Image 1 (spheres, rainbow, N blue to C red):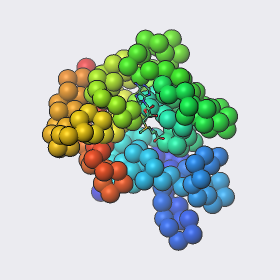
Image 2: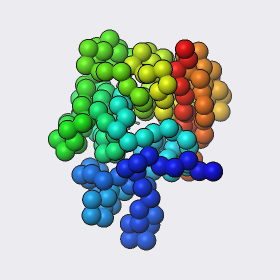
Image 3: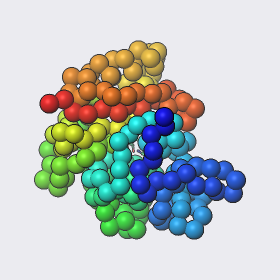
Image 4: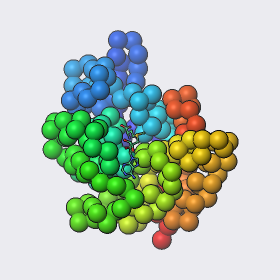
Length: 211
Ligand SMILES: C[S@@+](CC[C@H](N)C(=O)[O-])C[C@H]1O[C@@H](n2cnc3c(N)ncnc32)[C@H](O)[C@@H]1O
């Protein structure tokens, strides 16, 4: 049975195309219909995980730490239905657009920080129900392990693992095995699924912290 979408995320018709959608201010030229804005799974790995029917455990109003927020494409949707949403991004250029997305969302808090240095934002971020990670950098399992400290015991890590960020030459399946093995030292992996056809050579992972 396909898991239900979190409250605040719905399948909506946009001119004959049905897509997941949230209600909020448009941010990246996505289609809109009244208050609804299309959550484009081709532009968002978390959107792809939902569109593929992965059981993310997401619900409305959860506290979220989002790692690798870029210009805010995905995190803007998360903030549309979530609670306080801390958005970490270390590149100054996309953060300007992220700030624009936050202007329309009082629950979205951009942090110009390095996700490999959680001590630099530990004084700002409260314990969260969800970590969403999409950092597309080498050492993705390590980033998840470093940030586990913020996650409640029954919380969820929703990670998009990009194979080519770890090793451009290796077989993606081998990279996924290695990343999942490393992740498994600090998390219990509940589900994993490749994000084709939306994102090539990406693995969506749902995990919960080990005791
Ligand atoms: C694939 S993009 C993220 C796209 C975004 N999640 C979305 O769906 O809208 C990856 C982002 O992670 C950021 N990133 C990579 N390493 C990081 C780190 N150590 N700390 C913070 N951000 C990082 C990059 O600058 C880039 O903007």
